[in-house]
Image 1 (cartoon, rainbow, N blue to C red):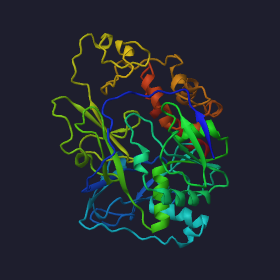
Image 2 (image 1 turned 180 degrees about the vertical axis):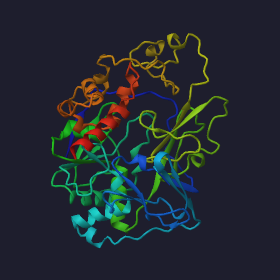
Image 3 (image 1 turned 90 degrees about the vertical axis):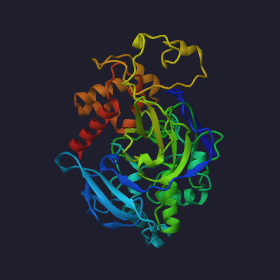
Image 4 (image 1 turned 90 degrees about the horizontal axis):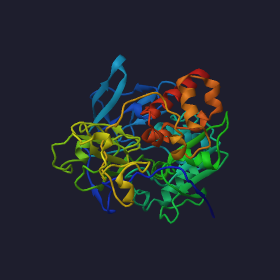
Length: 449
Protein backbone atom coordinates (compact mmCIF):
# COMPACT_ATOMS: atom_id res chain seq x y z
CA UNK A 1 0.00 0.00 0.00
CA UNK A 2 1.43 3.38 -1.00
CA UNK A 3 0.36 6.99 -0.80
CA UNK A 4 0.80 9.61 -3.50
CA UNK A 5 1.61 13.29 -3.48
CA UNK A 6 1.88 15.69 -6.40
CA UNK A 7 4.27 18.63 -6.12
CA UNK A 8 3.15 21.47 -8.39
CA UNK A 9 5.82 24.10 -7.93
CA UNK A 10 9.29 23.61 -9.35
CA UNK A 11 11.12 23.61 -12.66
CA UNK A 12 12.64 20.96 -14.91
CA UNK A 13 15.57 22.33 -16.92
CA UNK A 14 15.69 20.82 -20.41
CA UNK A 15 19.40 20.39 -21.08
CA UNK A 16 21.35 18.50 -23.73
CA UNK A 17 23.69 15.74 -22.67
CA UNK A 18 21.49 13.21 -20.89
CA UNK A 19 22.52 9.54 -20.81
CA UNK A 20 20.51 7.77 -23.51
CA UNK A 21 21.03 4.10 -22.56
CA UNK A 22 21.41 1.98 -19.45
CA UNK A 23 24.74 0.31 -20.30
CA UNK A 24 27.36 0.68 -17.57
CA UNK A 25 31.08 0.91 -18.42
CA UNK A 26 33.74 -0.05 -15.90
CA UNK A 27 36.33 2.60 -15.08
CA UNK A 28 38.82 1.61 -12.34
CA UNK A 29 40.03 4.60 -10.36
CA UNK A 30 43.76 5.03 -9.78
CA UNK A 31 43.27 7.66 -7.08
CA UNK A 32 40.42 9.03 -5.00
CA UNK A 33 39.91 11.82 -2.52
CA UNK A 34 37.62 12.71 0.36
CA UNK A 35 36.88 16.38 1.00
CA UNK A 36 35.60 17.43 4.43
CA UNK A 37 33.81 20.48 2.98
CA UNK A 38 31.30 18.06 1.42
CA UNK A 39 30.13 17.18 4.94
CA UNK A 40 28.76 20.24 6.77
CA UNK A 41 28.81 19.95 10.54
CA UNK A 42 31.78 17.57 10.45
CA UNK A 43 34.85 19.10 12.15
CA UNK A 44 37.75 17.14 10.60
CA UNK A 45 40.72 15.72 12.45
CA UNK A 46 43.28 13.58 10.62
CA UNK A 47 43.68 9.98 11.72
CA UNK A 48 46.35 9.22 9.07
CA UNK A 49 49.43 10.89 7.64
CA UNK A 50 51.01 10.94 4.21
CA UNK A 51 52.55 7.59 3.35
CA UNK A 52 50.18 5.50 5.48
CA UNK A 53 48.62 2.41 3.95
CA UNK A 54 44.84 2.14 4.25
CA UNK A 55 42.11 -0.35 3.38
CA UNK A 56 38.65 0.30 1.99
CA UNK A 57 36.77 1.54 5.06
CA UNK A 58 39.85 2.63 7.04
CA UNK A 59 39.27 5.96 8.84
CA UNK A 60 40.97 8.94 7.22
CA UNK A 61 39.32 11.66 9.30
CA UNK A 62 37.28 11.76 12.50
CA UNK A 63 34.98 14.43 13.89
CA UNK A 64 36.67 16.41 16.65
CA UNK A 65 33.37 16.65 18.52
CA UNK A 66 32.41 12.97 18.10
CA UNK A 67 35.52 10.89 17.52
CA UNK A 68 33.52 7.77 16.64
CA UNK A 69 32.19 9.48 13.49
CA UNK A 70 34.61 8.80 10.63
CA UNK A 71 35.14 9.61 7.00
CA UNK A 72 36.69 6.46 5.60
CA UNK A 73 38.85 5.57 2.64
CA UNK A 74 36.97 4.68 -0.56
CA UNK A 75 39.87 2.55 -1.81
CA UNK A 76 42.77 0.40 -0.65
CA UNK A 77 46.14 2.05 -1.13
CA UNK A 78 48.52 4.70 0.18
CA UNK A 79 47.69 8.18 1.46
CA UNK A 80 49.60 10.21 -1.12
CA UNK A 81 48.66 13.75 -0.16
CA UNK A 82 46.92 15.79 2.51
CA UNK A 83 46.02 19.15 0.96
CA UNK A 84 45.50 22.12 3.24
CA UNK A 85 44.18 25.62 2.71
CA UNK A 86 44.15 28.80 4.74
CA UNK A 87 44.92 28.37 8.43
CA UNK A 88 45.87 24.76 7.66
CA UNK A 89 42.28 23.83 6.95
CA UNK A 90 42.06 20.32 5.49
CA UNK A 91 40.89 20.54 1.88
CA UNK A 92 41.22 16.90 0.83
CA UNK A 93 42.92 13.61 1.59
CA UNK A 94 44.09 11.76 -1.53
CA UNK A 95 44.61 8.00 -1.70
CA UNK A 96 46.50 6.22 -4.50
CA UNK A 97 45.14 2.76 -5.31
CA UNK A 98 46.96 -0.55 -4.88
CA UNK A 99 46.59 -3.32 -7.45
CA UNK A 100 44.82 -5.51 -4.92
CA UNK A 101 41.80 -4.02 -3.15
CA UNK A 102 41.02 -5.18 0.38
CA UNK A 103 38.41 -3.88 2.82
CA UNK A 104 38.08 -3.56 6.58
CA UNK A 105 35.86 -6.31 8.00
CA UNK A 106 33.44 -5.00 10.62
CA UNK A 107 31.76 -7.09 13.31
CA UNK A 108 28.06 -6.86 12.42
CA UNK A 109 26.62 -9.62 14.65
CA UNK A 110 24.91 -7.24 17.09
CA UNK A 111 23.75 -4.96 14.29
CA UNK A 112 22.14 -7.89 12.46
CA UNK A 113 20.24 -8.77 15.63
CA UNK A 114 18.75 -5.28 15.70
CA UNK A 115 20.81 -3.69 18.47
CA UNK A 116 20.23 0.04 17.90
CA UNK A 117 23.45 1.19 19.57
CA UNK A 118 25.50 -1.36 17.58
CA UNK A 119 23.91 -0.14 14.34
CA UNK A 120 24.66 3.47 15.26
CA UNK A 121 28.32 2.71 16.04
CA UNK A 122 28.72 0.61 12.90
CA UNK A 123 27.43 3.40 10.66
CA UNK A 124 29.61 5.99 12.36
CA UNK A 125 32.81 3.94 12.18
CA UNK A 126 32.27 2.77 8.59
CA UNK A 127 31.83 6.27 7.17
CA UNK A 128 28.19 5.80 6.14
CA UNK A 129 26.90 8.05 8.93
CA UNK A 130 28.33 11.12 7.18
CA UNK A 131 26.43 10.19 4.00
CA UNK A 132 23.15 11.11 5.71
CA UNK A 133 21.86 14.57 6.62
CA UNK A 134 19.98 15.87 9.61
CA UNK A 135 17.23 18.43 9.72
CA UNK A 136 17.41 20.97 11.22
CA UNK A 137 20.64 22.57 9.93
CA UNK A 138 21.25 20.18 6.97
CA UNK A 139 24.39 18.74 8.57
CA UNK A 140 25.99 15.37 9.20
CA UNK A 141 23.71 13.89 11.90
CA UNK A 142 24.71 14.30 15.51
CA UNK A 143 26.14 11.12 16.95
CA UNK A 144 23.30 10.71 19.45
CA UNK A 145 20.37 11.79 17.26
CA UNK A 146 17.03 10.04 17.74
CA UNK A 147 15.17 11.06 14.58
CA UNK A 148 11.42 11.65 14.59
CA UNK A 149 11.23 10.21 11.05
CA UNK A 150 13.56 9.10 8.26
CA UNK A 151 13.10 10.24 4.65
CA UNK A 152 14.65 8.21 1.84
CA UNK A 153 14.46 9.41 -1.77
CA UNK A 154 14.71 6.67 -4.42
CA UNK A 155 14.71 8.98 -7.44
CA UNK A 156 16.52 12.08 -8.65
CA UNK A 157 14.98 14.56 -11.07
CA UNK A 158 17.73 17.18 -10.98
CA UNK A 159 19.03 18.24 -14.44
CA UNK A 160 20.57 15.25 -16.29
CA UNK A 161 20.53 13.20 -13.08
CA UNK A 162 21.09 9.41 -13.19
CA UNK A 163 18.15 7.02 -13.18
CA UNK A 164 17.75 5.26 -9.83
CA UNK A 165 16.11 2.31 -11.61
CA UNK A 166 19.64 1.64 -12.91
CA UNK A 167 21.56 2.59 -9.77
CA UNK A 168 19.43 0.31 -7.58
CA UNK A 169 18.86 -2.61 -9.92
CA UNK A 170 19.17 -5.91 -8.01
CA UNK A 171 19.49 -4.22 -4.60
CA UNK A 172 16.31 -5.62 -2.99
CA UNK A 173 18.07 -7.43 -0.13
CA UNK A 174 20.38 -4.52 0.63
CA UNK A 175 17.54 -1.98 0.66
CA UNK A 176 15.47 -4.15 2.98
CA UNK A 177 18.39 -4.71 5.38
CA UNK A 178 19.19 -0.98 5.35
CA UNK A 179 15.59 -0.03 6.08
CA UNK A 180 15.41 -2.52 8.94
CA UNK A 181 18.61 -1.09 10.43
CA UNK A 182 17.46 2.54 10.23
CA UNK A 183 14.08 1.50 11.62
CA UNK A 184 15.86 0.64 14.89
CA UNK A 185 17.12 4.23 15.19
CA UNK A 186 13.72 5.94 15.04
CA UNK A 187 10.40 5.53 16.78
CA UNK A 188 8.70 7.10 13.77
CA UNK A 189 8.32 6.10 10.13
CA UNK A 190 10.70 5.57 7.24
CA UNK A 191 9.22 7.42 4.27
CA UNK A 192 10.51 5.87 1.04
CA UNK A 193 9.69 7.89 -2.08
CA UNK A 194 9.69 6.77 -5.70
CA UNK A 195 8.36 8.02 -9.02
CA UNK A 196 4.98 6.57 -10.14
CA UNK A 197 5.68 3.56 -12.36
CA UNK A 198 9.28 3.23 -11.18
CA UNK A 199 10.99 -0.17 -11.08
CA UNK A 200 13.05 0.72 -8.01
CA UNK A 201 12.78 -2.03 -5.33
CA UNK A 202 10.63 -1.02 -2.36
CA UNK A 203 11.40 -2.56 1.07
CA UNK A 204 8.42 -4.00 2.89
CA UNK A 205 9.03 -2.20 6.18
CA UNK A 206 8.68 1.41 4.93
CA UNK A 207 5.95 3.95 4.23
CA UNK A 208 6.00 3.97 0.43
CA UNK A 209 5.20 7.34 -1.16
CA UNK A 210 4.87 7.96 -4.90
CA UNK A 211 5.95 11.52 -5.66
CA UNK A 212 5.18 13.28 -8.94
CA UNK A 213 6.06 16.78 -10.03
CA UNK A 214 9.07 18.78 -11.27
CA UNK A 215 12.42 19.28 -9.57
CA UNK A 216 13.04 19.70 -6.59
CA UNK A 217 10.45 16.99 -5.85
CA UNK A 218 13.23 14.40 -5.44
CA UNK A 219 14.91 16.18 -2.52
CA UNK A 220 14.10 14.40 0.76
CA UNK A 221 13.87 17.78 2.52
CA UNK A 222 11.10 18.83 0.13
CA UNK A 223 9.35 15.51 0.71
CA UNK A 224 9.66 15.98 4.48
CA UNK A 225 8.07 19.44 4.24
CA UNK A 226 5.13 18.01 2.27
CA UNK A 227 4.66 14.77 4.24
CA UNK A 228 5.58 15.43 7.88
CA UNK A 229 7.02 18.91 8.55
CA UNK A 230 9.32 19.07 11.53
CA UNK A 231 8.72 21.27 14.55
CA UNK A 232 11.22 23.03 16.78
CA UNK A 233 13.01 20.48 18.93
CA UNK A 234 12.53 17.62 16.46
CA UNK A 235 15.10 16.06 14.14
CA UNK A 236 14.79 13.91 11.04
CA UNK A 237 17.25 11.98 8.88
CA UNK A 238 17.52 12.55 5.12
CA UNK A 239 19.26 10.23 2.66
CA UNK A 240 18.99 8.73 -0.80
CA UNK A 241 18.25 5.09 -1.56
CA UNK A 242 21.80 4.46 -2.82
CA UNK A 243 23.09 5.23 0.68
CA UNK A 244 20.34 3.02 2.14
CA UNK A 245 21.55 0.14 -0.06
CA UNK A 246 25.14 0.72 1.11
CA UNK A 247 23.96 0.52 4.72
CA UNK A 248 22.17 -2.75 4.00
CA UNK A 249 25.20 -4.21 2.25
CA UNK A 250 27.38 -3.31 5.23
CA UNK A 251 24.94 -5.06 7.58
CA UNK A 252 24.84 -8.18 5.39
CA UNK A 253 28.53 -8.49 4.47
CA UNK A 254 30.45 -6.63 7.18
CA UNK A 255 32.20 -4.52 4.53
CA UNK A 256 31.46 -1.03 3.24
CA UNK A 257 31.20 -0.79 -0.55
CA UNK A 258 32.34 2.53 -2.01
CA UNK A 259 31.84 1.51 -5.62
CA UNK A 260 29.34 3.80 -7.36
CA UNK A 261 27.64 4.25 -10.70
CA UNK A 262 28.20 7.76 -12.04
CA UNK A 263 26.38 9.52 -14.90
CA UNK A 264 28.77 11.42 -17.18
CA UNK A 265 26.54 14.13 -18.67
CA UNK A 266 26.44 17.55 -20.28
CA UNK A 267 26.50 19.18 -23.69
CA UNK A 268 30.32 19.08 -23.87
CA UNK A 269 30.50 15.30 -23.42
CA UNK A 270 30.93 13.21 -26.59
CA UNK A 271 29.04 10.17 -25.36
CA UNK A 272 27.03 10.61 -22.14
CA UNK A 273 27.11 7.30 -20.27
CA UNK A 274 27.11 5.47 -16.98
CA UNK A 275 30.45 4.55 -15.43
CA UNK A 276 31.11 2.22 -12.54
CA UNK A 277 33.94 3.62 -10.45
CA UNK A 278 34.95 4.51 -6.90
CA UNK A 279 33.54 7.29 -4.72
CA UNK A 280 35.84 10.31 -4.88
CA UNK A 281 37.52 9.18 -8.11
CA UNK A 282 39.65 11.64 -10.08
CA UNK A 283 37.57 13.31 -12.79
CA UNK A 284 40.27 13.18 -15.46
CA UNK A 285 40.03 9.38 -15.32
CA UNK A 286 36.24 9.43 -15.71
CA UNK A 287 36.33 11.92 -18.59
CA UNK A 288 39.28 10.44 -20.46
CA UNK A 289 38.83 11.09 -24.22
CA UNK A 290 35.11 11.76 -23.73
CA UNK A 291 35.17 15.56 -24.07
CA UNK A 292 34.25 17.16 -27.38
CA UNK A 293 37.14 18.47 -29.46
CA UNK A 294 36.72 22.21 -29.10
CA UNK A 295 38.80 25.25 -28.26
CA UNK A 296 36.04 26.69 -26.08
CA UNK A 297 36.41 26.85 -22.31
CA UNK A 298 34.50 24.29 -20.26
CA UNK A 299 33.24 23.95 -16.73
CA UNK A 300 33.55 20.48 -15.20
CA UNK A 301 31.05 20.09 -12.41
CA UNK A 302 31.11 17.31 -9.84
CA UNK A 303 27.35 16.97 -9.49
CA UNK A 304 24.51 18.65 -11.36
CA UNK A 305 24.40 22.20 -12.73
CA UNK A 306 22.32 23.49 -9.81
CA UNK A 307 24.09 22.16 -6.73
CA UNK A 308 27.36 20.67 -8.01
CA UNK A 309 30.93 21.81 -7.35
CA UNK A 310 33.13 23.47 -9.97
CA UNK A 311 35.89 20.88 -9.65
CA UNK A 312 37.98 21.39 -12.80
CA UNK A 313 39.66 18.68 -14.83
CA UNK A 314 42.11 17.87 -12.00
CA UNK A 315 39.40 17.70 -9.37
CA UNK A 316 37.67 14.72 -7.80
CA UNK A 317 34.16 13.33 -7.65
CA UNK A 318 32.20 14.98 -4.85
CA UNK A 319 29.39 13.83 -2.54
CA UNK A 320 26.92 12.26 -3.33
CA UNK A 321 29.14 10.59 -5.97
CA UNK A 322 26.46 10.16 -8.65
CA UNK A 323 27.05 12.61 -11.49
CA UNK A 324 29.54 14.67 -13.49
CA UNK A 325 28.34 17.46 -15.78
CA UNK A 326 30.41 19.27 -18.42
CA UNK A 327 29.05 22.52 -19.92
CA UNK A 328 30.59 25.53 -21.71
CA UNK A 329 32.16 28.09 -19.39
CA UNK A 330 30.95 30.99 -21.52
CA UNK A 331 33.76 33.40 -20.64
CA UNK A 332 35.10 33.20 -24.20
CA UNK A 333 31.79 33.91 -25.95
CA UNK A 334 31.22 37.05 -28.02
CA UNK A 335 27.46 37.05 -28.47
CA UNK A 336 25.61 39.38 -30.82
CA UNK A 337 23.27 41.66 -28.80
CA UNK A 338 24.20 39.81 -25.60
CA UNK A 339 21.29 39.34 -23.21
CA UNK A 340 18.93 41.08 -25.66
CA UNK A 341 19.48 38.45 -28.35
CA UNK A 342 16.31 36.80 -29.67
CA UNK A 343 18.12 33.58 -30.52
CA UNK A 344 15.92 30.45 -30.21
CA UNK A 345 18.90 28.80 -28.47
CA UNK A 346 18.31 30.98 -25.41
CA UNK A 347 16.64 29.26 -22.48
CA UNK A 348 14.22 31.26 -20.35
CA UNK A 349 11.86 30.50 -17.48
CA UNK A 350 9.51 33.37 -18.32
CA UNK A 351 8.93 32.73 -22.03
CA UNK A 352 11.08 35.75 -22.92
CA UNK A 353 12.72 34.16 -25.96
CA UNK A 354 11.61 32.45 -29.15
CA UNK A 355 12.55 29.11 -27.58
CA UNK A 356 9.24 29.27 -25.70
CA UNK A 357 7.61 28.24 -28.99
CA UNK A 358 9.73 25.05 -29.07
CA UNK A 359 8.53 23.04 -26.06
CA UNK A 360 10.59 19.94 -26.86
CA UNK A 361 13.89 21.72 -27.43
CA UNK A 362 16.96 20.79 -25.35
CA UNK A 363 19.36 23.60 -24.52
CA UNK A 364 23.11 24.06 -24.06
CA UNK A 365 23.45 26.88 -21.51
CA UNK A 366 26.85 27.97 -20.27
CA UNK A 367 28.02 28.94 -16.80
CA UNK A 368 27.64 32.73 -17.11
CA UNK A 369 25.50 34.63 -14.62
CA UNK A 370 24.16 36.86 -17.44
CA UNK A 371 23.65 39.94 -15.32
CA UNK A 372 25.20 41.80 -12.45
CA UNK A 373 24.43 41.40 -8.77
CA UNK A 374 22.02 44.03 -7.53
CA UNK A 375 19.75 44.92 -4.65
CA UNK A 376 17.29 42.19 -3.68
CA UNK A 377 14.15 42.41 -5.80
CA UNK A 378 10.92 41.16 -4.22
CA UNK A 379 9.67 39.53 -7.42
CA UNK A 380 7.98 36.44 -5.92
CA UNK A 381 10.01 34.30 -8.33
CA UNK A 382 11.23 32.06 -5.52
CA UNK A 383 7.68 30.99 -4.66
CA UNK A 384 7.18 29.56 -8.15
CA UNK A 385 9.97 27.00 -7.81
CA UNK A 386 10.11 26.23 -4.07
CA UNK A 387 7.32 23.82 -3.06
CA UNK A 388 7.38 24.52 0.67
CA UNK A 389 4.94 26.36 2.89
CA UNK A 390 7.35 29.17 3.73
CA UNK A 391 8.07 32.72 2.55
CA UNK A 392 11.51 32.25 0.94
CA UNK A 393 12.29 35.89 0.13
CA UNK A 394 11.54 37.00 3.70
CA UNK A 395 13.57 34.08 5.04
CA UNK A 396 16.58 35.14 2.96
CA UNK A 397 16.23 38.69 4.33
CA UNK A 398 16.06 37.38 7.88
CA UNK A 399 19.20 35.31 7.30
CA UNK A 400 21.09 38.30 5.88
CA UNK A 401 20.10 40.39 8.89
CA UNK A 402 20.93 37.51 11.31
CA UNK A 403 17.50 37.84 12.96
CA UNK A 404 17.20 34.52 14.80
CA UNK A 405 13.56 34.97 15.85
CA UNK A 406 12.48 35.80 12.29
CA UNK A 407 14.48 32.88 10.88
CA UNK A 408 12.72 30.49 13.26
CA UNK A 409 9.29 31.91 12.44
CA UNK A 410 9.94 31.74 8.69
CA UNK A 411 10.93 28.05 8.67
CA UNK A 412 14.69 27.83 8.64
CA UNK A 413 14.57 24.49 10.50
CA UNK A 414 12.88 22.89 7.47
CA UNK A 415 15.26 23.95 4.71
CA UNK A 416 18.56 22.88 3.18
CA UNK A 417 20.77 24.91 0.80
CA UNK A 418 19.83 22.60 -2.10
CA UNK A 419 16.17 23.60 -1.70
CA UNK A 420 17.14 27.08 -2.88
CA UNK A 421 19.12 26.00 -5.96
CA UNK A 422 16.26 26.72 -8.36
CA UNK A 423 15.50 29.98 -6.54
CA UNK A 424 19.11 30.93 -7.20
CA UNK A 425 18.69 30.02 -10.87
CA UNK A 426 15.60 32.21 -11.41
CA UNK A 427 16.72 35.01 -9.08
CA UNK A 428 16.81 38.39 -10.90
CA UNK A 429 19.11 39.72 -8.16
CA UNK A 430 21.81 37.09 -8.85
CA UNK A 431 22.24 36.31 -5.15
CA UNK A 432 24.21 33.27 -4.02
CA UNK A 433 21.21 31.86 -2.19
CA UNK A 434 22.64 28.43 -1.39
CA UNK A 435 25.67 30.04 0.21
CA UNK A 436 23.45 32.47 2.14
CA UNK A 437 21.26 29.64 3.47
CA UNK A 438 24.30 27.57 4.44
CA UNK A 439 25.75 30.51 6.37
CA UNK A 440 22.38 31.13 8.03
CA UNK A 441 22.07 27.52 9.16
CA UNK A 442 25.63 27.53 10.53
CA UNK A 443 24.93 30.78 12.37
CA UNK A 444 21.76 29.37 13.95
CA UNK A 445 23.57 26.24 15.09
CA UNK A 446 26.44 28.23 16.55
CA UNK A 447 24.14 30.56 18.47
CA UNK A 448 21.63 27.99 19.74
CA UNK A 449 23.74 24.94 20.55
